[in-house]
Image (cartoon, rainbow, N blue to C red; front, top):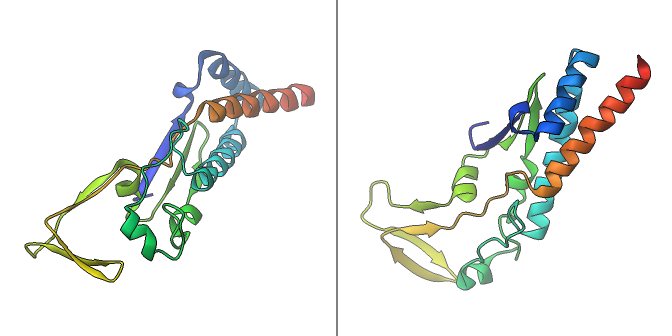
Length: 170
């Protein structure tokens, strides 16, 4: 994932969940299904952020420039074509899950960026049919990747659900 990614390992889980995960490793051996389920959950919550237009802490994303917003086909932030949202995916291993996207512009939206001309002296673009000339453009951070409090709860529920399932089987 070259665009932007979040890696979740067992070390970032709270201590009780971490102990439960260690128990799962003993019960299951291969915990990729657990990490895969966590990945699916985190992809879903990331998709919800595009609907709520909030970061993982629940804070609203920075609003669009009003002139820019007027010319958009879609009034939603980070959703002009849906490509960024639709590219969010997860990759699971035995002790890690990565959630992210390979879109080249994802990191600029996640972290914010200052866009400067590569070879010209200025940037030239149109907003609302008007030509704009600028030395640089600041793209505010609009974090869509991350773990919310609700995500932490969901991760714990997934781990404990797997323990229940695998404890019964033994």
